[in-house]
Image (cartoon, rainbow, N blue to C red):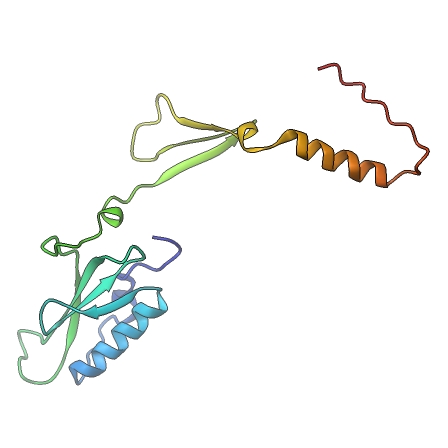
Length: 159
């Protein structure tokens, strides 16, 4: 996921909150999920809401329920599940990795945080991403604009 809040953040926001009607609860929960950047749709049962990730898949299910100790009193609470029984569950979001990286000289080095950093890491050579002739020409042009036309420029680089 991007910079989105996790749906589980709802627990902190609605901590110890009860709703008088399921409709009011559904509206509050779905509005907050949309604020977090998720879309929602009706779940597989009458008391569920599916949370759709940025990949268009169902990643979590919000269960709407009446507390067992007070059924029929019109007081509703929710629970969020990672429901592996949903066929379309997003495989991209399920495999959540943390990649650490650093710029080291002319290279971007990166590795999986969960794997032991004892050996090889992956590396991208930044020189392969830069057209140095184009960069050099822009720098020369900018330099030449700072001096009068009759100025002589001498390249002393022997490479």
